[in-house]
Length: 93
Image (cartoon, rainbow, N blue to C red):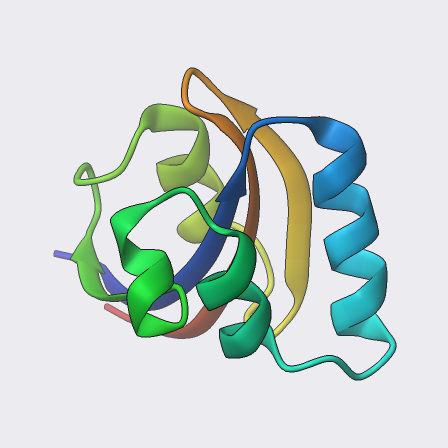
């Protein structure tokens, strides 16, 4: 079964998500941004979700994690929880 090492940031609105993405792409530390802004409990761990298996995440995020490029900041991605920035650090089969 496919697994991936993932980290993400969850916020309530798209504008905030886009602003945070720009900050990270300009060199801001992902983990610090996650700790400060993410509404997901994983924010306390710098956004680290750790090792996830296919099917463990909400469908829109699950699909991204197992099809999108690794080590690229993806998002904003909308789910029922809000807007996500997602980075697939490593994917294994």
